[in-house]
Image (cartoon, rainbow, N blue to C red; front, side):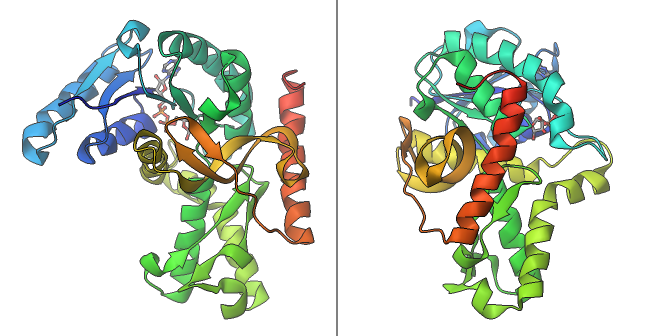
Length: 311
Ligand code: APR
């Protein structure tokens, strides 16, 4: 049986966990590539040993050679350094820019028809960089930020209200970082916006917890950053792409005038399918929400400008 082919670049915490979920959910055959020799091969072999226990059919290959990634349907890029305690995502900018440039050049040459899902931080900047360097249509270069941020918002709401997670819909938009814009009016428990269920101070506390959810994990782990929820977020997006579902996910996409934002990659709800971004249905934001989103875009634009990439 032929499965789609997904390459995961970076066999670290996020990449290997995403690969495991892709296999367990029967999504795709996986190629995992890393600069570290033996690491992707060893983890791939371990996952192949898991096959007979978990009874999944897709296979995984570990490699250091982009030739093995050729013709992938989706390429997920997790290569890079993760945050250490006290580091912001932007501290990673210089180191991860160099890694992203080298990865996207090789990966896009091997798989020119793939959809590329960037995960490396600082996410919105790295996704812009990947798009620019690849020369690909912007629809086929996207980033994983909003799905994770929205999941963290949902967790915060569940913790506060005690509601089952299945009854919660949460939305966070904007930059994947301190300039994130959780959207309380569009975040509901059983369809009721949390702005109608909770005091304003409680809502503000949940927003704060969401924005610093990643940092909370980093502070606890002390070495490295979150990977279970990031990996699940990647796989949710990849499943919609591979399955051509057109499902809406808050995704880091190229904005070309939507929300009054030009030439910036930022997380907003987007329909994902085989061609990558199929549509960006614009949310009916009020003036304050729009201002917050535009301010978030501004911080990303400045960072991208510092790399001399825009325009
Ligand atoms: N090509 C391929 N792999 C690379 C390269 C490169 N040029 N440079 C580094 N790597 C690999 C490392 O060898 C390592 O195995 O990327 C992997 C990163 O794994 P971890 O250090 O475990 O980091 P992880 O927690 O997976 O985070 C990866 O995702 O969420 C973001 O901020 C996070 O940018 C970070 C990325």
